[in-house]
Length: 350
Length: 122
Image (cartoon, rainbow over all chains, first blue to last red; front, side, top):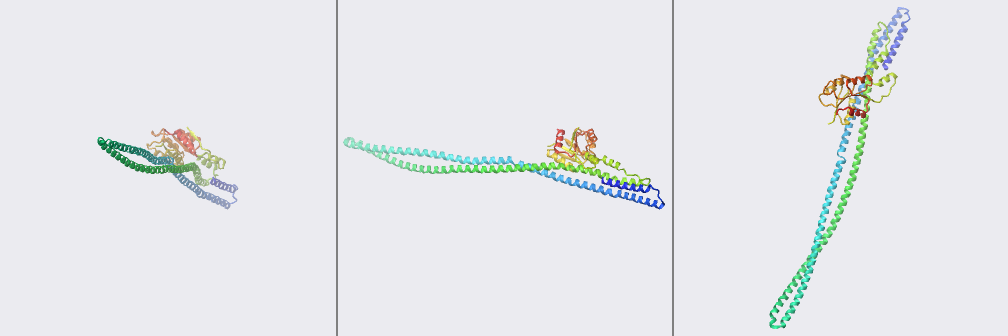
């Protein structure tokens, strides 16, 4: 556009100059020659202008368009890679996240509960053993009581046999045989008493051993019961700590995931802004194509000048430029001569 | 396996932007750099939808749509024109060629995805 205005201005000035100097009749041949030479020089400069300047303008426009396209394509590519990386990170975070953690935690809780349960089971066995041993103690006490009864019976039998021997000696010869029996009964009674005494002794030893075992077992049971309770408390404490840790990790993971998701969304939204490159690229392309029509236009004007000086036609050139527009804002910019905002996108279904 | 969409546009950045939006929504994407290249991608593979620019070198979008409609395997494949062109006459050309929708850039990904979801083959 700037090029057109400059060239049109130059052309206008040239024509004005030419007309201003051509209309009055040359006063003499020298003046006419000078005027012709001056016009020739001007037309030559116009020709050189058309051959050199618009090419540079067009080259700069195309260079800008290509640089922008390269940069935007590169940027869009990088952003696309970031989006893919974020998607991967989000996917990994979700895959190793709450489900696995929850499974591991519940599995650990179950296994530790099994361990505590096994300890509790062993303690129950020990309690049953103590109960059984208490039963044996009771039986032993009963045996001890029975030996006392046996000793008492033996004592009474011994006394009875002694009385029988006395009565036998009182009846003389007739009681001799009975006296022998009485002696034997007394001897058996003594043996019974001795046996009862030995059994009682053993039973008391056994009672002492059982009592000691029971005491030790009760102490062990108390200690183990306390250990199981302590272990259970510790396990619960560790599980609670782990639960807090896992919950913290989960919250942290969710926050990171939320942030990454937000970043991904922001980048994806930002990427849509890169569409400006396509629109600007097209406008620059249209401008470059228009600039490139200037040299042949000037060349034709220069060639026509041999017959007659014809003014350049900015309207035709602008119409040609307008015919290349594809976007509504190009038309609006052309019409208003000022930049215009890009209209919202629209979708038409056929 | 996701549905496949062919994007035909001579602007690499536009192909990337459209591709990101579509891949993010779970679609598989293949690309063509102009109409001729786009036609070469229609080699028998299943394509559920095509998104094409209008102004492209070698083969423009309207010609591309016309050629696609001549291919028996793809004549019913819906085509969305994605372009900076907003002239009514161009839209009518696109419609006559067989396009199903005309989206003027710059597009919002959500609107593009809504249009894709509405038109894509089952």
